[in-house]
Length: 137
Image 1 (cartoon, rainbow, N blue to C red):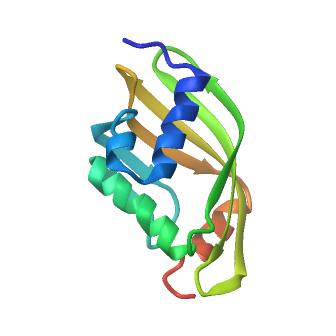
Image 2 (cartoon, rainbow, N blue to C red):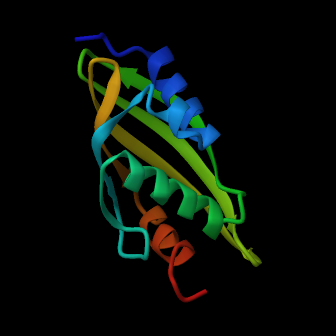
């Protein structure tokens, strides 16, 4: 089992930001699962790398490509990482609808790849998150 490091976590997110499956699959397992919190059109389970990449593409589409995650901190051990990020963006076609929340992502790793993950949003951010990604904009 490869030891999870802060650098590995950063590289995984950098690969994800490329949108290129060949890069993403270096750090994200083909059979991974991902849980998106909340009660909106993006919420729920995503099974497999293709579904996860599709979710990320939808985030980009709904935000008009403005969605950004800025890393605040990363914590790691042999099997898990937790990163805290500030997530910001504007809703596509409606720049008055803004997202600005802090999120904690918990990732489980095996052999240097993410096998599962989920996000947690705290406080008022949960309401803002659901409203931002609502199908009714």
